Length: 273
Image (tube, rainbow, N blue to C red; front, side, top):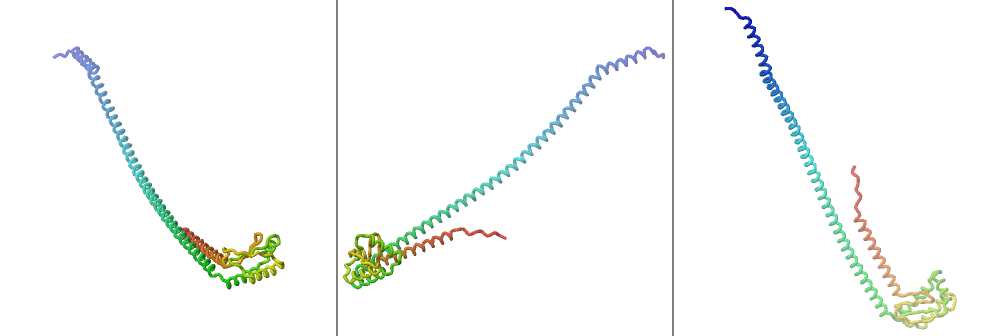
């Protein structure tokens, strides 16, 4: 059998042309489509990975925010609890201090009221005692008592110190009126003479005297002239005693108040070693 090489060559050329045409118009678009799909799939996978990574980052950020929120919430709750406890303690302390201050104020007011009542009772008692003593002396005044009072008055005149004597002498010399000698009862001539003699002796001069009666001069005698006065009376001793008792009670009250104030002062705190 003879081989037609022209036909073989033509078939080869046809086959090559067919391959070129298939590759150009069929395989290449298919391959390009496959490549494009692979690239799209790779891009989608890359996007998916990126989205997954971003989602993971977002999840991590959200978790971090939740953790921060929980931590801040715990801190705020703890701080609020501490502040509430401190405020409660402060209010309790303030209430306790206010109660203590009110209790101390009431006790102080009660103490002052009791002290005032005791002072008033003591004052009225002293006044009544001395008033009774004065009335008793007035009722008991008699001749023998007046003589003793006259003797005591003349002793008082003779016992004047230099300053009192000089002041009384100046008043006697500067007065145009006689000196007044007053007593609750009329002085008998003997007692008037005794007083006159004592005045003349003390001031080395003849002293003009006018004798008067004054019921308010209880159990005593007083000499007055030009604003100066010399007196002796049992009432004066009672008044002096009353003043002394009053001063003694006042000193005692002041001492008690001072002791109470010191007792209320807080003791100094000692430093621990």
